Image 1 (tube, rainbow, N blue to C red):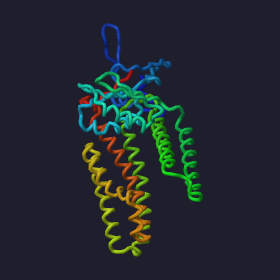
Image 2 (cartoon, rainbow, N blue to C red; image 1 turned 90 degrees about the horizontal axis):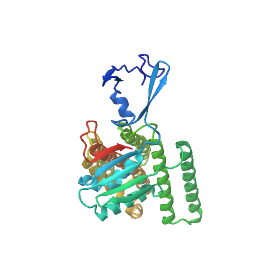
Image 3 (cartoon, rainbow, N blue to C red; image 1 turned 180 degrees about the vertical axis):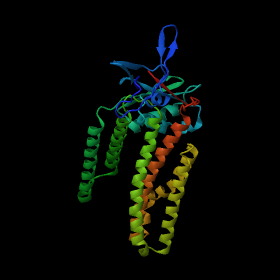
Image 4 (cartoon, one colour; image 1 turned 90 degrees about the vertical axis):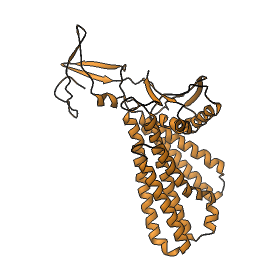
Length: 348
């Protein structure tokens, strides 16, 4: 933001009226959208740089601490403590507080501790600040997006190499696979947090928009998965029995209904609709528990296509989880008018 009426290259002019404060001070107001996009509120510190005949306003400071507070009196929030913590982690929040007007139940404390371990055990600490409040401190991972992405790629390559070795030697158990998966997931979460921290940005609409952008990215993957599935169905449908075609039709209909439900829960945000969408999709994903029996009782064409259906369902599940996170934060966060009750953002 500058005092000149001429915008700098790549910028835009934002003329403001000079007003008097007291007997000797002059003030100007900051444009609302600009202040919000940089996480500025009443009491935030900015730096005013004198540059010839211009004054440049530089928002924020790199060591600013963002904190979020949630009231545990909301039943839906208590159901989704892990998701609230996960969203705070991805959105760049440094301190999270869950408070109540009565002593915090032990089961809620245990659930938050378990969620912290699942998201990033190394960088999230959980403590009972008082009998009425649980505090979480999130330490930023060391590294930048580029190097972290490179490390993630190498880890994924090692996991694939290990699986290739197992195909030949049959020497990898489920415990090892689960351990590798947890490590890869933790790396992905850290990478997303590093990318979401941004530059001089607070937990504003920009951060919530990142959740939607993540959903868009997942849907792009779902588009590709759908294309591959549809192409295979066109090729193999003649090799399926009538009963197999009916089962495939039912699974596709469940996917369709689930996507319709989750889309309806975006605007306005609805935790209930996103939950309903997830439970509908679970009917498809539950097949994985009996996958061996299903494959043995089916022909090769149906078994192959079923695997593609499950691939698509897993992507849709992640998409719906993302929109559920968005609905939780959007519904229970402090909105633009400041009327939210469950969530408050503070800068220290």
